[in-house]
Image (cartoon, rainbow, N blue to C red; front, side, top):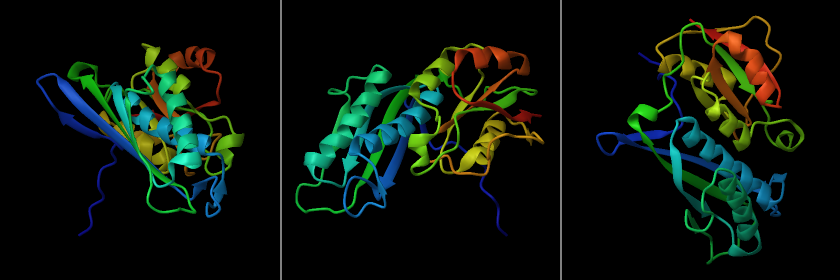
Length: 247
């Protein structure tokens, strides 16, 4: 008999002391970049920014502080590797990481490549009592920040970014936060509900496509009391939509 696995976040959690938790996330990209064999043509810097952003969001949304980033680049150091790392470093600086000391990287130095590929891992640490998982409450609404985007849409649409996430983390009325990637809004909404041992009821009228891939974490979901919705809209200048209610 087939049993569907319960939805869960794209992070690894490991207790490393009585009160410290290690949080690890990763992301990968292929055939997106400036090389001849790439299917989607964008600058290496853009690839680096969005891949770093996606992995960093997962760790930050859990309440953890990122302490290092590891980048495995399947391209030559110059010019492609350098341009990708430039984008990674820009995202690191946004959240206050040291783009020199906190970055580990490797590039392909033996063979020529004609297609861009990379993998990024972020490692963070959080105090057990500061872990922001399962904090949603019965009656909370789930809201989305940003437009689900994939491919070249990522450059055209209003998408969530690290500054939006930092803003959410600073708001005491926000209960839980989760980034949305390729699994889409429906899946990640169910994760928020499952973490708090609740059920999710999607609204009848939703103004964005909740079935669509959100690519490299172009959307953030947050839970909060409905009476705080207008307060949220005043603080974040991105498209915000009500998605569901937690029961």
